[in-house]
Image (cartoon, rainbow over all chains, first blue to last red; front, side, top):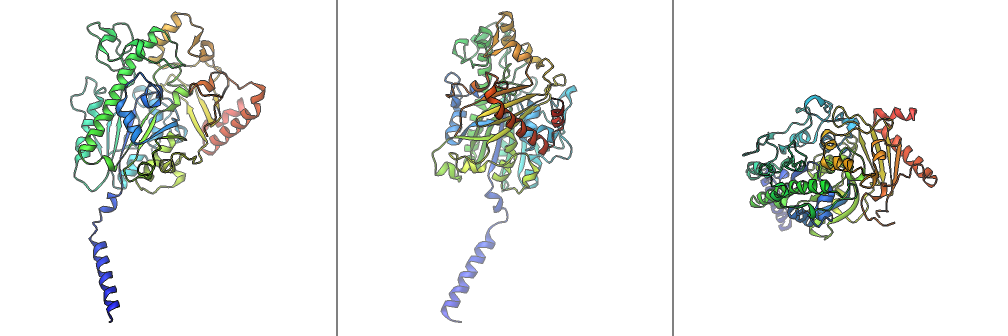
Length: 445
Length: 49
């Protein structure tokens, strides 16, 4: 054997030794941790990075600076259970069966045969954990490895949003070769059952038992920005001040989550996806398929190794994405194989790679069938980059209200004032809708 | 056309506007096709419109 062959054998031995020394678990080490944080009724008009100069959302805005802010992200339904089921299955509601609310006598559920995102990730070796609002079923379909408990929670356990992030501390700090998937869903900024001393909903804020009204909040009525789909009346402004306060708790939750991830040395290898199930809990947004109901906030902070973060400075994309895309996107980021035909959506990882390019989705579809069991009003929507069409299938019926929206002081205040329009819409047109409603929008590209 | 508000595009219903009929018909066909492809039970309601 000559010197060249000996050196070749030595080199081969060296590489074989090196390759065999890599622990099997290191294949997982390349997989990022993934956090999917879902807010409850957070409309994009109450988000600093989307242009609201009055609300304070510093942690969410910072996430947008470090990640990618989506300007044309669309939910598929402006209703809690229905929307969440789409997020975790990649299927439209008529394909997954979750047509309305899961809780109590509403009793809608996802089809048993559907294989959800947490189940897929768990089978691929992820440690999956859930904390906060669930509101989809059956539990077996949406099975997580861990259900995290919130310490020091409020009476009904729902409004300690920051506590939800703190509850994830053991998961985030655990010594493990396996990545984690955390599904954190706040109950904020949803409406609450309580009212302040002025008769406005408190949105989960501290009770107004001393009659301080808005003085107990960080926001005042004159501070808020009233979006064009709402009437600018005192009741609206007061409710928005309460709403902003609730949004701020969501922002604080993101702040705590990021703090924990950084303290654990996990931040750089964690993908954080922040979005809302549907728009603001106001008439004209939630439970409608109008833009304020389904055009929603979406921020994605990728893992540090990701090209878009390390090589590009773009943090805003005009790409159209839909909530049916979330599951396939997370699976691709997690490097978990799947069949494209398993989902109604497609992965938007190419957008994360090149946010400034059009990656082919030029249309989104949305729907509404139920919200509460009493609210049958099927609608189907197609929205492309220029135009939108709403098909009100039950157009002969009066549009049904969610119970909390009907009694909202914003709605009742507009009625008491005998306003002709609610925001930009005529009351009659809002309640009695045409078979088809069409809109035209500016070109996105 | 300028986008002053993200919602402005649907403040006025163009469904019956004569200039919009070709686009509307195309959107209706696109929606119906998607419903058929994804097996939406409500697709049969088109027959009653």
